[in-house]
Image 1: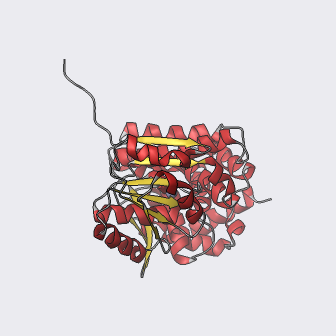
Image 2: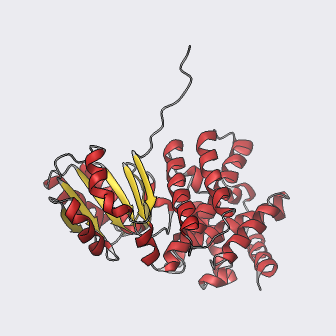
Length: 357
Ligand SMILES: [Zn+2]
């Protein structure tokens, strides 16, 4: 019988629960990730130090390094320290920035990385992509996917709620990314990886229909698992396609043109809603999805309109116009419609009028 299957890269272990950090030493030993205890721990400015102390008893020989933000420089500097110390593995503990820098450093030094997320702000906590800032702005870098993923809900609950909520926007933006992918298949014959698409979309469906809020462990678990599944979908596809479409082009444009407005997940949510507004008004499809996404963002207290993140209609219009340049070669609803400046402004005005309070 022919073996008609495929091999997929996935983490060895995914642990989402309260108290998960306490099992970290055991996990590293059991999974043979670090058999001699030569483990480096990279922590960020948030709760990293506290967690490092928490795991120290189970990782006696570990050494703690501080990561100075999510920059290429910080990641390269950590990478050279990891190389010099001949560690078996590095554990990145923190929010998105610390984990992204650690993933990049682990890739540079050729050792496995374990991701311990302390907030749920975006799907980079378990993806093969690191988003880091450099002299010219922000860039996405291909990295090795984390070998194991730990989300301790006790720490997530202690994180600023805004950072926890933001991940909701990143997961629901999968809908828009996936529809952009299908549009690209139709319009320009791009190949779609249905397995990756299924994983990305199912994560978003599960989150959309989870009735709880970030106050409940049940909801936080679905959110954390949704972010992990988004990361895995990217690993299956070999790039960020299943979780990044016109929605992310808009967010990257806002990041570049108007730095410091909303965070990644917040902007991804607005970008996804706006992309569905374009679909609904120009292609006559996706109106129901638009309502679902807007309702979801509102229910969780996430921004929905440009004004919610301090952007004027004109600024958002300029971001939408600039968006395709942030990801050359990616075909989304934005490239498909190719709206000129006046038509884009009109679409933004319509969106704000239709969904503003
Ligand atoms: Zn994202």
